[in-house]
Length: 281
Image 1 (cartoon, one colour):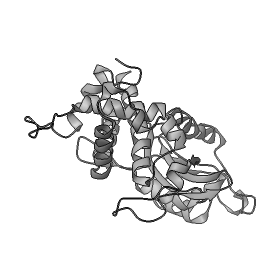
Image 2 (image 1 turned 90 degrees about the vertical axis):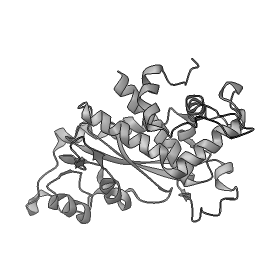
Image 3 (image 1 turned 135 degrees about the horizontal axis):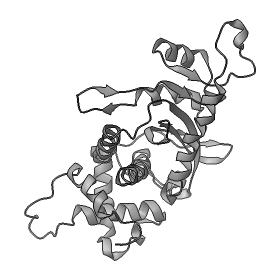
Image 4 (image 1 turned 90 degrees about the horizontal axis):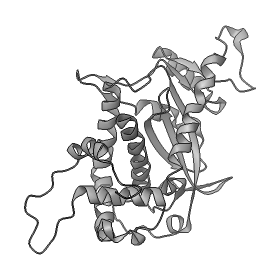
């Protein structure tokens, strides 16, 4: 087994979530097995190398890329993410005591920033923009109290984190075995960039505790509002540690993908690796 390949216990978790393999390949075509293909995707994710440099043991690079592109477009990668997250929740491995929010800028290389977009179904800025850190993308991440990713949103690099807080929180949804959907933790941990009346009032209506420092120009606890729970706030760095683990995968630490859809799929693959490692341990 090569360095980045799926171990047997992880493959047993992912295999049932993939599309069925054809019993009889099309005439004149040889079918590449899903395990070999997904191992090739993980090799590109972890190494950061171009698809064309994919080792021959994973088959033709074009075959691996085309299936990745197809799975990103059809939602297969999102299905794996959601199913593994539900499995973690069923095993009691998701910490719902808190939801931590943060954003991180990712530099986009020239191949992503200036290359023409050939797909007619892809329009817009593809979550690319210029910030102090250069031209790139911002990843907005919501994690549980232990640092497991719950939801991911992309935006252009110059976008402010607070604009995507509600979208991050509303996008959390873990399907449980009884058919219900778990959507919120007991509190929200975030730095003062997220501080604002809109988010605080929304959390208050839902009965969620806001553990967010107030900005210098905001009124403090003297107006009857509760002070910051500093003991709970110390746990906010779980989201930063999650970013650190995801950025160990070089295809996430630097953006090479032309489209936001494919880059988001790469970030999701990185989350999937975190999930199956937690489940297998």
